[in-house]
Image (cartoon, rainbow, N blue to C red; front, side, top):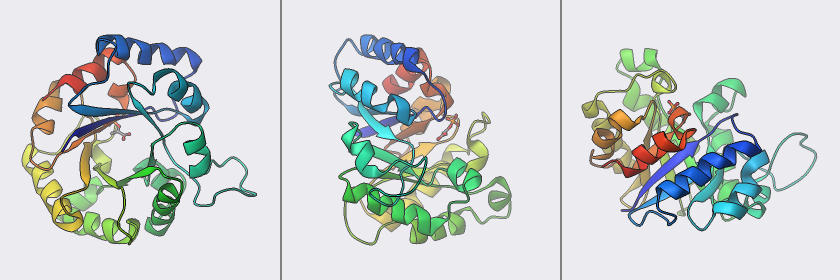
Length: 237
Ligand code: PEP
């Protein structure tokens, strides 16, 4: 299965930041990486321009979408709008959205279904908190999130396992714990779904993480903002 290396820029990036993508493309020798898919999910304001300039080398995606196609939802962006701007993927259920916007599994499921309706591949994020891991509940928590967040119908899907306590902290689970969780998710979703690991992936740990069975790529936050770091991760493993 071709690995997917996805960058989540979060609420970072202005027009000038597209230069980082240009640097990434130069680092890739101007062509797409043949053995892995690259995706950047910039803020919605940059999506159309990024897609226009770089979609021959990278995929571009959204960081969230509304479940409806259009309507009176001030400030929201629909999956159809993301697709129209050139997106191929959209992240749904990121732990920051679950925390900041009180999104629950049923919201995430509706967004994942909206993504598919618009022809986008949803990247559904799941992951336990530090306390839940400490209590030995990580597999149960992720199992429940999968049950509640995934569309019932077959279709394009990517899962991102992102332990909440590993995001932006520099901490990561042991390689054994990542392998255990990815094996657990694989048993639930079958062989055709890419399962990404996310949470403090850096140039220094990407090789070991990407070598784990059932890790089919990475969702990278902070280290995706600098072309040199992202390039090292893309080239790892
Ligand atoms: C993320 O936001 O999805 C993420 C994994 O962030 P970071 O790589 O910075 O931990």
